[in-house]
Length: 385
Ligand code: UD1
Image (cartoon, rainbow, N blue to C red; front, side, top):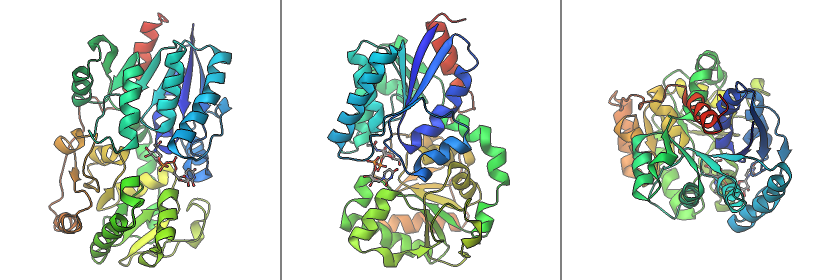
């Protein structure tokens, strides 16, 4: 028997853990617990994903909430150490690159509990990104490093990670996308928002480097306004960005797509947003957001995961960052890296509107079976089959 503690904390973790838990359930000798650190806590940033993706209720919620990096990481560590003392797991499995990922890896490794890191080896080579530090430290501490692409393997080998610890398995985030794709395509979120199919863009923006500085954010908004004269931009706004927009007095640049609450709960209140402008709404659930993506003309984002999802969906993606830890989405996929250069953002958007958007293909092993491979490898390691 193997006792595994799986960790989630923030929004991009939830769609990654969902397919892994489903696969673990198929191995009777694999006993698992799910720990939610509580890094994200708003209904639309957390609970909505559990509901939509049928993720079992966490066995424990550490309820750490928001704070500075050091305080948040320390609080997760203190609470998670208690969990490890009590549960004595044989393995701690972490996903992605958020503060919960590094905090729990650090605790487990000091207690000599092996760590499995799902989505290992990604590197932006920009240590100003908190996630880059989380990635590097988590990988150093991990016993099992599950990677999404060849570049990740190369990064790890270059950093001196032993070859036998690295397993190229594919992308668990894509497992979730493919498993839900039919449902996603059939939904009518875009239609209920008053949008016309293929005639709007989707925007997400929440990186501290883009939204925490008044001037940087102002410049990006200027570029987006240029683009929005040609087609409406739908912008489900992250709480960090909402706070920054309010702090800098930038509200006037945005139009409100609807009042409060998610569209699913509040379908009647969506205003028609077929006309140009940057239209904001609250953060959306997973399925509604993906529905907007599959039916849009193109996506503008500073997210990591969305670069991968648009690649698989063959939707052009303009990434508003200077670096990416996911270069395979540029070499194989639909991604173009633009930084915050307003002129280039507008130029690239125009190219797409003229039908010259980038086309791409899915990288090898992004086939919906990454979780199956991970669980098979772990079952073998623990001699469960
Ligand atoms: C975190 C991750 C980032 C990920 C992002 C996805 C780290 C270092 N960053 O960034 O990699 O891309 O999640 O969303 O782990 N807030 C709320 N409600 C919530 C959560 C946050 O209002 O449920 C607000 C708080 O004001 C908080 C701010 O958002 O201070 C930032 O939250 P935090 O978890 O610190 O970082 P994110 O920017 O969400």
